[in-house]
Amino acid sequence: MTADYWSIFACAAIWVLFAYICGSVSFAVVVSRLFGLSDPRTFGSHNPGATNVLRTGHKGAALLTLFMDGFKGWLPLVLAKAYAVQNPFLDSSMADFAVKQNSWEMLTPWIIAGVAMSAFVGHLWPVFFGFKGGKGVATAAGLLFGMQPTLGLMVLLTWVGVAVLTRYSSLSALLSAAFAPIYLVIGSIYLWRDEFIYATPWPLALVSAIMAMLLIYRHKENVQRLLKGEESKIFSKKKS
Image (cartoon, rainbow, N blue to C red; front, side, top):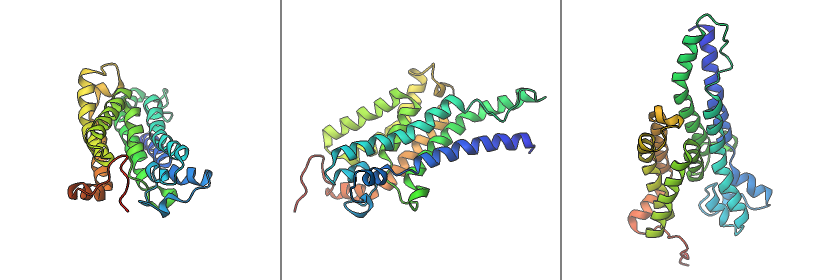
């Protein structure tokens, strides 16, 4: 591999590392410290997420956590979609510039998919917080809106529909995540013909499928309670 191709690899690695660092910021912990609340990893479900922050009774802190956990997924993905195709390591004076630029453009969809996956993994296993992160629902939602706003809306409506019918927040999240890659592929064929993912939907579809599996894994305790009929419902009061 020539030095020029190592530069291309370095550019890809920078994008993926940037996304992982963004995802590694646990806003449940940061916001709780900002508002003088208890560390969400020390009470309730011990999950550093908006739902556990809400258990403190501070709705503003929980809402800010929810937004920022989604934003940290959305931001690196949107930036990658806008700028990753412009590889600064490629010099137009190169004799084989056209060949390398074409190779980079073919690689870009996979780089963007890698950015999405890295941001999500960063939330689940954050380097700044001992690799102990949240379940990833808000970050996954931010990533889906970053992939395509209509896709994010479709998944959100699925969550709302399941939540209204069943009143199970965890089941809503799991089913929404499972439908996300299906929506992405169908939408790329019939709805988003002028969007980046129309030509190459499979990298992001693969990532959204992996995210769905990771979400199911992170919600394994919720799944067990659902199967036993012991999962708490939305707006229901806990039994003493």
